[in-house]
Length: 455
Ligand code: FAD
Image (cartoon, rainbow, N blue to C red):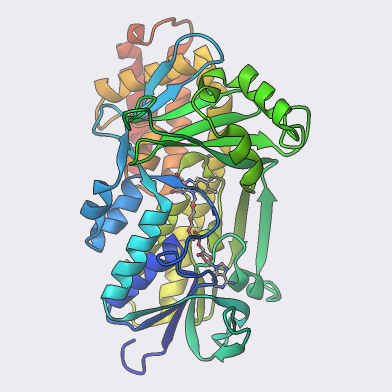
């Protein structure tokens, strides 16, 4: 690949594009990255996707491979479980893993994106170009039409190998649309989201448990909050677009305040800028994108959200996109041909991306609905007992997705079996600690162990 090296062009300097350019540079390639936005290290951009996000084992593994995990973790806040906020009554705590070593991490999206861009540039092989919007592409020829948003001029990039990491509304993906073999589905969620802030307390401290992801599950909608380094929390309200309890119904400050007072009274007391932020900030859309093929010959490949946008409820969109980079890099270590590498990439990743996208939709139902349900809490308790009593034998879906790198598809399938075992053992129980461990051993060794051995 290095003789007759073609131009490598990454479209989009978001989280995945920035990391990918770093991976490609480490392989000795020279990379141009085209980003439609201004440089976020020099200009403050409008509030974008989400202020912070959860990074877990898969994403951290990718950062480790490029030597950036340690620095990233210095800016991360471990979240060891969920704190459930009912409308009235006691808070409930659900640990994420078998013990505190299994946790996810809250990290600033802006910080991480800037960090990745800077580290990519520092390789001396990556040229980031801002205000460069790709408007059209010939995906088989590797030609891009690029609008310079600063000057209004249009130019062409020719004969490039193109990596489309331009997010869920990808222009590169849209350019694949006319190809007869290409098909894509986009399923918008009937919910939007809005970000709100719980500022630090008077002494600069956290006003709620720092090491947790907070959830206010309310059936058809929910509020969540993740901690930030400065002592604040970023809350995200997920609410239907239409209906009696929806964004459409919250048109006035009075309606908003009444809604928060009724549904999230403890959170309302901690969000002084509720009205101002709610009406000033954009309401975000969420969509599941599934498409194939992700590639056009050896010229163009989609990765990250451009290939597989998912709803954010498993906290895996970026993690999955980072894992794309890990997988592509491992293939490029073996393959001398872009087309072969791209084919192998799609073969390995497509089924896994579909699996995590489906699990993300399912987890929305779990988070907004079931986390407040006593039956669900009992089953989560039983799951934890089994994780501790049968280490290495019993595994849960959440553990495999968040704390391992086993393929998402396998996590999906194991989750079905493990969930069935937990449900069966929970029948007639009132306390998780009373679970019948002999019966559990039989079920685990009869159903889960053979499946795990086979895979
Ligand atoms: P993006 O981050 O969308 O980046 C695409 C880049 O391409 C942008 O910089 C954009 O400006 C640029 N671009 C777009 N079009 C063009 C064009 N035509 N020309 C040039 N440049 C272009 N994931 C997690 O792992 N954990 C979480 O906790 C988590 N929480 C989330 C919460 C919310 C509310 C949302 C919406 C998402 C969350 N995600 C999370 C998902 C995560 O944000 C995405 O999966 C991730 O940002 C994908 O990265 P990307 O680089 O593929 O796309």
